[in-house]
Image 1 (cartoon, rainbow, N blue to C red):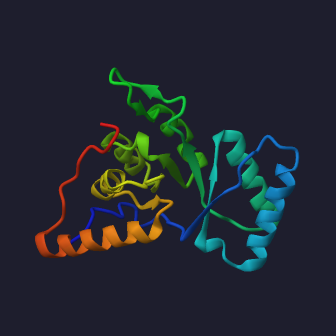
Image 2: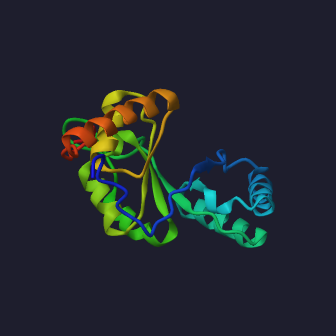
Image 3: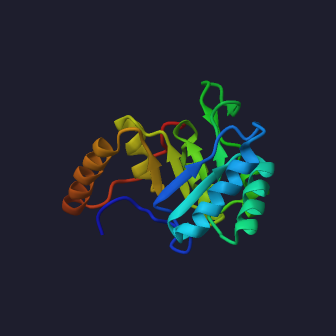
Length: 186
């Protein structure tokens, strides 16, 4: 079969749309979260959605709001490059021990493309959790995600990304799958 190696996690659900309700420190955030899940429950679209949560408290707040609304939406833990450990070349790397410790909280991870490397992909695979990479707005970032087989990418240029990936799919169908590479983080 041509194309990228993914999806690696057939049992994991990769939503069509992932939402992030930002500014969790604002006083109105809990009410907004309740309204979000109420609307999701009424719409019947929970199986097509995912949400991004930051930290254990964020995940717990999302789960509580989901229980109150009697709905279930996959939660993706947010992994930022800001504040991440850096190697001697200054490249950020995900804290893989934190991924292990928090694996039960999340259904997958929403990861900065700057953290993307083969170790992170392997860690996601070890927990059978899908990775959604953001923001892949350049060809090198998109190619790294493609080669590493991540389940989804977030981009500000969806038409461009779709066209590039369609070209790559045709190339893979013709020439066979691309080899995996470490990605932009090393």
